[in-house]
Length: 349
Image (cartoon, rainbow, N blue to C red; front, side, top):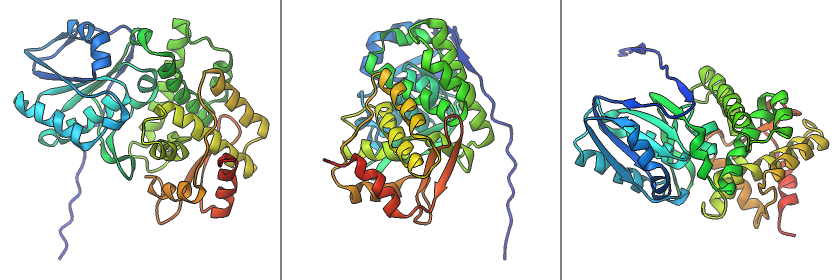
């Protein structure tokens, strides 16, 4: 006996991404702001002065990728229960990608789902992590392996929050900008080669173009069944680098920069990218102060980590690779010897 169920979505998902000075935010429900000590010390007073709500509570969690865990999410959940939030309550993620990912995941879990808003304060989260609804946490097996696709109700991107961002964090965000350009838009890549992102208008233009590209991709493929996987260019390699170094040596964007260089080396090996194009990408990353080299200690172990990647299936690794600059291809079924020959170029000498 089969009883079919065919559910139709009650309403389409739609929200705005505002790139401008933070507006006045008025809510008629309980609000919980999730942040970390660094962001709170710099910007919490500014945020709170922009929020009007009948009840407002702040949850501060430790700063760093190593705290992006189920234990931290449980702590946020407990705070929500202590404040007696209901299904009409709201979470606000105020921080970088770690805060956004955990807050969104918590919102998806609390009473089976409450609304949340993203107010990103790092370049990486403004151009990438805050847009598209990917939420989750890490565990010992890898990065973001526990999570949900859960869209925010709104995203507010205020470039003024970047004024206090350390140069290293700014560069990490730039890596995600380069990722978008290499995958989708050669003209954008050319713009970046000569752009001065210390200029506010050029910075806003870079953020706008990255967000528009990300939104275009997510609109076509919310749950990464197809083209959205392309946004993981550099991440298949970069996530292994992060895992091998226990998420403490590199910022996420730094690991992605290394991962892009590795992916480009594989693309060159396969004849999909010219060596000169790979050099252009590497030079742009290095100009921003990003790392582009890494010493793999154990080639076989590094390779085996690929199979924990969320894009891999049926014991086959999917690699997101550039075709020149401005286009891309998803490649799978490569012989291990081909991949390992490229990895050996990054091995301990």
